[in-house]
Length: 143
Image (cartoon, helix red, strand yellow):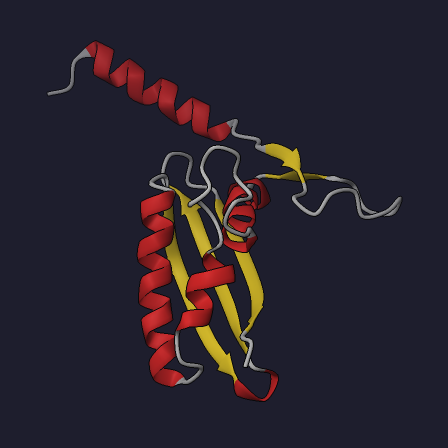
């Protein structure tokens, strides 16, 4: 049986989750007068993830090995269906290792051979707040 303290903590936690309103600046910066540079809720969750995935090694000051997943690892898999399976597995494990509070809900990796690129679509969820965030990217593969 839950104590009064445990019940109150649970109520407080639920109240906290009802009032979550993430807000951040778009990782691409200010895009023009017609679009606000601020992003909210699920977009904030994936903003940090996007920056990390699309960064280059050395972009993080004092953490030169961090970042660069698309820059290095995604391009190391063969651009075919078998490579897509391996890339999907590696990407999911790497994201969940680098971002313990993020759960990958859905991940689709598609090779686009005529453009020498990967199409990556992902939906993630914040384990603490339950906020969902979508992410989609194309990663070119040099010959």
